[in-house]
Image (tube, rainbow, N blue to C red; front, top):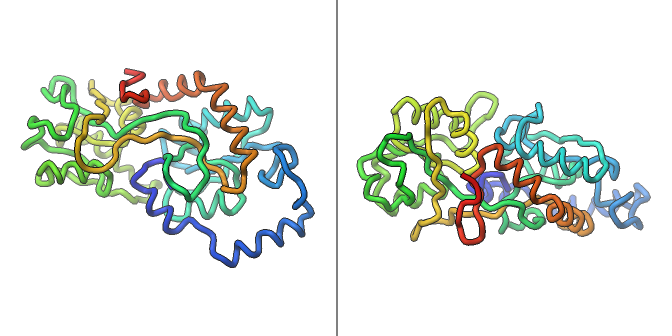
Length: 292
């Protein structure tokens, strides 16, 4: 699983325990003398009931980083405050093995942003809904393009991260000859393809950039030139573009999931405010944009 839906299948393939570990884990819990405990306080569900332990990428803005500057860091801080817990992180790159080496290894208890619809983790109720988005320069004549089916995109230079759902839509609409492709899986210590794409848009090396909504909104807020972010909600072909985003917990952690669901419901307004300050394009259930 990943904050970006295109990486979900990769994490599903590699992010599960083997049969041997499934057999060993109950023995470990019995040996620890906690097998009879249930509930949130003192629960076997949590690594430490006094600490909110979050699984996160150390270099993945706008989501998270080690300095606590991402919006998932801010949401985690809010939840820790509401729970009366201290906050700690288990950092691991958001790539192959992320779930296996963090949540499933019992090194942390929650992943802050997970697309709904996958079973590698147990998802909470969603706390926002967003979509892939098109970013255009103000004054380019492309500000009103709101679909990859728009004829105005013919013969335009289109930035796309390889392997993402919008790439399928570009192929369906005969636009593959127009694209500039950026890598999907990178070492975030040395490469930032989304930022590179935005730099190319600012430098007029591409005409539009197509990015996962939270990334598009964040980069647009910090762009060097005026740009417009348009959520892609009108596609009639190709892959799914719109996702509900919740939190991820272990399948066994039922009480913990219920508590998180309660916290999401009680603090939705504050969570939405955090997302808005980072430029995340938020959608209601009718695909209308909640924030501009």
